[in-house]
Amino acid sequence: MPISRISLGSPAEASQPDALKAALAEFISMLIFVFAGSGSGMAFNKLSDNGPTTPAGLIAASLAHAFALFVAVSVGANISGGHVNPAVTFGAFVGGHITLLRSVLYWIAQLLGSVVACLLLNFATGGLAVGAFALSAGVTSWNALVFEIVMTFGLVYTVYATAVDPKKGNIGIIAPLAIGFIVGANILAGGAFTGASMNPAVSFGPAVVSWTWGSQWVYWLGPFVGAGLAALVYEILFINQSTHEQLPTTDY
Image 1 (tube, one colour):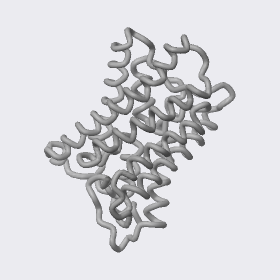
Image 2: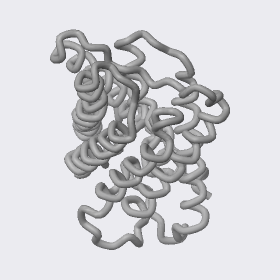
Image 3: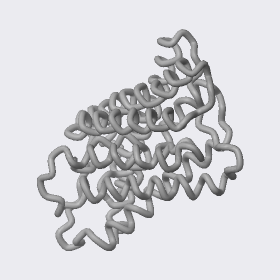
């Protein structure tokens, strides 16, 4: 069972150079991802004079996030594993691929990266608002929670299948490409209902900068539940426990 491989880690790990470099890589990757992703939404608002979201705007957001995540995962892969998402880090922790202590370092770096990206966007655009995630009209918190759970399940399941599974073989750039694609596709599916976060850090940065916290718990609980379920399902059903080797980070 993956739960038996969960490790808390040692306090000394927090000062190890590789752990600090990995956290810095997560900070930079998250900054790249949020700056491009949230920036695309701000650009749409400027071009449409803060008009209502349109199908074209949704497609633009999907492409921007898919492209940016592909790059963000790729540039961090060899240093931190390219998680770029606290939920992905949690999924790796549940599967025994990263210690709790290193997970905390990643979470801090990811949240800071998102906040800094949103502050830079606010400054660079002359004070334009960084839109916080919010539920659409007619969508309850429980509706949104299910959306976020299912979308994040798909994301983390993709991470496991293309990046974590030791039987994946040499698939090169397929892992970050597939991860970017599933996020882009999920935005097309859920963007009109919840904003399709799938990533607590992505919703946290805009919430801090705009100080808008409505339904924020949905964007934390949903991704963490979905990530944990995906990790357990893939580990139990598809990873050969006898040959599995615990890794400090996801290997892609």
